[in-house]
Length: 144
Ligand code: AMP
Image (cartoon, rainbow, N blue to C red):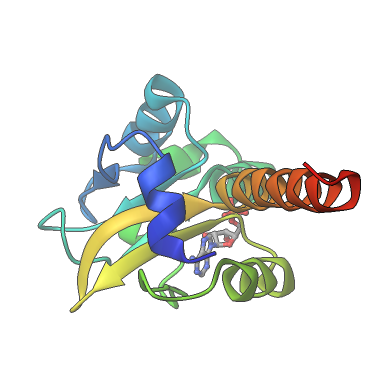
């Protein structure tokens, strides 16, 4: 299965982004309002400059207290973004996420964001693929 197939299975409501100069409280507000776990940091909504996850915010609150909510998003975001493209294989993306211990991956084509997949999207797609394979194998064995 390819990343493009996983994107097709998702509701196409775009990638949620926030400007790098926004503060962390605004990012937390956005995560809560949209019921998501991370937001891509982008000045133009298309180029990914970094990612800020609920984990980054919780970690900093734990270390420094709620004052960190006043920080700029660009000061707290992860800059070394791991991304994938539509033609990447889902199992390779799943390995990257598992080994890197993150759950979100922006999908880029020619440097522009075309979607974002989560580890949950990949696992869900893989489970439905396995269920179809099982049905096909059962059909072959039972002769129908
Ligand atoms: P997550 O599990 O995705 O909520 O994120 C866990 C940590 O990995 C946080 O520090 C994120 O900023 C970082 N992170 C999330 N997604 C990515 C990604 N695609 N590439 C690099 N780091 C990421």
